[in-house]
Image (cartoon, rainbow, N blue to C red):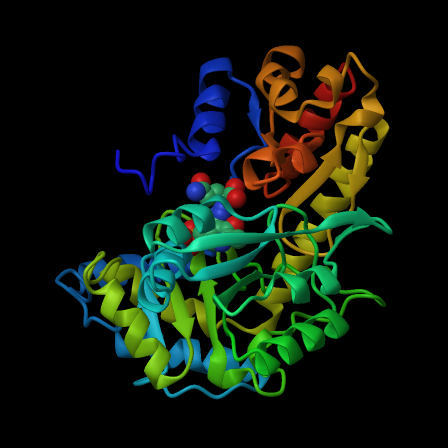
Length: 391
Ligand code: PMP
Ligand code: GLN
């Protein structure tokens, strides 16, 4: 393994899902739904396969039907216009979009600012691009993980090339507010930064008085021309195995990302691209139902975790709950060590979770936090809650 990748072993998701299989525990570790997306979208994939659409290499930028549907989605939900031919790129999931964006835009030695805790592929993709990651830590405060805007400003140096943002945020469930996004946009304009924004959980925002529907960073003043926005059918339609993602940005930035993408996979997921094009056109009720279903699951798991003694950070978005295990007490929380806690949890309670420390450079900051996924059937969550009572 070369030096760029030396610090990266097996991802925590593979490790924890293997642990779940080995122990027969309920897997609330890796974030994937245990029910597939809509029947009619699966049917659309079958039709594409049967009718020979996408069984051979699709066009490099993605099939026109899907690029048009992505542009239509950005217009319908956010009022943002993108030219399907020049400003949309289809990728092998958001993961490839992130990697290709960083490989295309970062010079060796450039600094990339990322919110910490960060989704694990960010660190590896920055490293592959030869960049230096500069984490800005979200810290608990007022029931959520909060971005310190002064710290973000102070992290920008003359070597900063881009800001890698994620909202709604995995693993904390934080949804950046309009005020926070405004400040980030002002900073990006002032310091002339590019922003790659991972918005794969855009439809998993539990709107209420304090939380409006998803606000894409590209919709803020001065941002459209400097923002690469990333979405994924894995999250929005519960097809994580299909690996269909997309990028929307300016023609120049999309061309740059495509330059890297064409030598990673060239293309992917032919027939599924046609199916996702149909999915993106589903009526508003689909998106509302997805959100409301997950809101109920969030509330079920949050209540169960609280009853079991965890300190719960109630997420405003995503399908993850971050907890602080220290409230369980010294011995039950393994001294507040999330790693030790998660390694023992399958044996102790028959449940798998993920230690947030793996998403930190400052491991100590993340040590007591543990993430549970709630994108599971209600009876599975109820069973997990029951098991956690015996902790
Ligand atoms: N970004 C974030 C924040 C994620 O949580 C995930 C999925 N776990 C991805 C990107 C990857 O998405 P995809 O499966 O479409 O590659
Ligand atoms: N995005 C999912 C999560 O955060 C898992 C992705 C993966 O397994 N690489 O759990």
